[in-house]
View 1 (cartoon, helix red, strand yellow):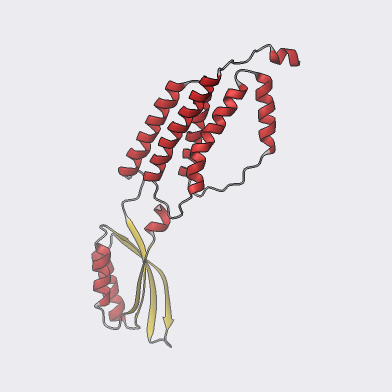
View 2 (cartoon, helix red, strand yellow):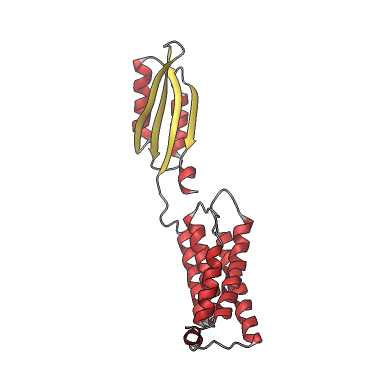
Length: 226
């Protein structure tokens, strides 16, 4: 069995070819990491993730060089890697895609498919930049929640409803409860604006209602998109 596996041969690579493959994987992975940094929109930055995008391709390139076209080596390396368990949690699927792209660069360089590695890196980075600056897939609506307290008076409730009808694309009552021994009503509304500036107009109109207090607006767009 061993002789059969070894009969497939092995890819002979001179040391300078290995240096070129590793150097190119480092260069292309660095370009990928720069594009990731420029298009990052999250709240928690991870320098370890960016460094992994550069070091990971070099490791995958090194593995592909070591394997060559030798099936026995490939089975041995796969078996050894199966022992290692990676428990890193990535919150954003976009981070995972960038890591896969980085590893793909390393694999392409490791098999000396340099044209594929260069073209793939440039096209992937271009697509990432275009998707980011065209804001493709991001919601154009501006959602949020408004909480406030008004006197327990039908006239005040009617005034609130009128303001929401005038300045929101959609609104829905989330909660309503009596506070201050029944003198005030506490409201929470889910709202959607047509334009970002409508939020300021809404708050100004609500502030003008007699007895209004505890007015708070919570922007839910950041929790969804960022």
